[in-house]
Image 1 (cartoon, rainbow, N blue to C red):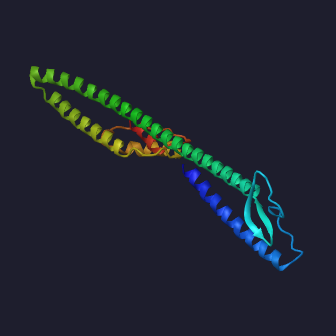
Image 2: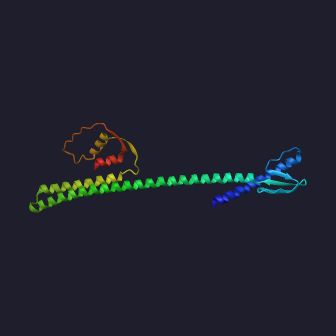
Length: 227
């Protein structure tokens, strides 16, 4: 509908410009006897017949003036074709942008789903181990109220609290975008080990690390080392 309106308005503008141009040429013809009119302006003693001919002036110095509108129709066809091509280009561009946005949204959604599945598996595994250990400690406490079992119960509670806090921290630090960068694994591993200082207290950890650089999302690599 908009294209039809645009073509109609453009046709009116072309026709108006053609009439003004014809008036100027006829004025020059009156001023100069040897002036040559453009091919689309035809002056004749008798009426002319033609598919694209329209009567412009019924009396011009005793003659008829006709305009050949084939030039106007050719310009109008070129305008309509250009309009169609630009519209097709715009539709293709918008379709491509929509596809890219949809693909990005689906990729992020799949990544979030995989991350949540991983976190649920890890948390359920740790919670299962914690519950199993506490069941054993409770059985021991029922029998002889052992201080050793009570200490193990207290340490296990602190451990599960620390693991829960660390898991929440990992979820909050999850990057919103998959930005790939060059990461040095040995340096990243040492940073992760610093967060386990409380659990490693009194223990000796020996590391034989080589410099290994990989390219990937730093947040994902750090999360895997934490888990």
